Image 1: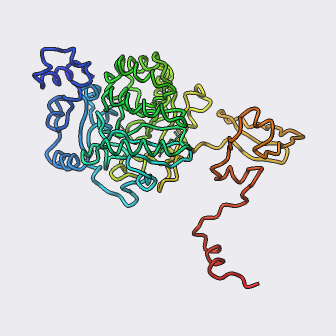
Image 2: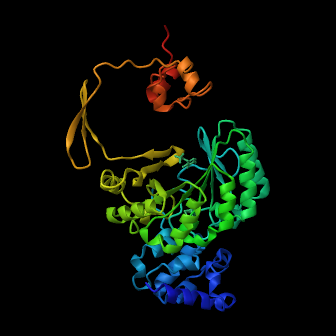
Image 3: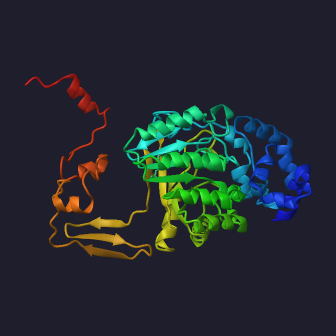
Length: 440
Ligand SMILES: *Cc1c(COP(=O)(O)O)cnc(C)c1O
Ligand code: SF4
């Protein structure tokens, strides 16, 4: 890798920064000088696409915007650019405009679960709030690539106010995820305002911020930003590193700043063919993350969004990776592997199987080494009959805390008001019963 040469190329391209190399660490300078044309990328990396390829790539860029910060571009190993993990995440592939049979525009039905613009309310106690629809670097694997970067979808201040009103009027919402786009594209002042509004809502117990900045533009993590974030605790920050090559000294410095400011850090990785679909790469990534005080949170199966088919792996690949992590490295370095269910079913955790079999008095389990063992169930176990209002409960969790309000399979296991079956509303047998009620 010749970072300096690339850096010089980038700086040289811009007369404004050419005489002042410290500009490199100014995030606004990086944004102003982001690469948005294939020609400039070719020049900066001293690479060449062939003619036919350039036509296809130009067509791709017309569909999905191209923008790469000089910093992120400088991580590419130009000598091996085609297989470079950063190149593959940042620069288009002609396969993006190929729409396959199972591809969908809005695979997660985020629009359908949207009570007001900018909000997706899918789970009972938390909402996703898209405060920005731009990013400093447009990931080629973005789930929301249809709308992210489209300036006609940028949130207006009326929409932001209406979204805040929605959160104010929804007492069940105790966790708000600021997402986008990238929320750190907002100015410090604007972000401070939104966080202040959220702080003032009594039922909002925690705010989360999802940002790719530490990976693609670490200079955005300034001391001033950290001061603002530190004012709005409890605030969790989830970032998005996909490959150990992204954990550069500058990225590590950004993470250290956030951790020093007392912000708990998590990471969400997307499993991407040709980028990180390898147990060794993933092991290195998660170990380097925890060494930087970042807890690997989720590993996402790539969604069914249009233009992502070349990034998709079989689910089996993800299970294979998790199998290679559990037991083999620190438990807190292992993310939860999830498939985000099409049509808005939410994240479904997927794991290797550890239960080999079950008898009435014991469970047969296997460990990561393949050792099979038995766990003896207790001879006697008196299940506490939960009425959700016993004295113990009130003493320890207080009134009004109902653990299983949202039903689901947990509702089938509930002690009081149990539900004894879940039947799809399209079940033919039940529909027939409704249409032709028995006449006795
Ligand atoms: C991922 C997601 C959340 C948060 O889910 P957690 O499992 O709590 O991290 C909330 N809302 C939507 C729409 C999501 O996609
Ligand atoms: S940072 Fe997130 S929202 Fe932005 S392009 Fe990447 S995946 Fe999409």
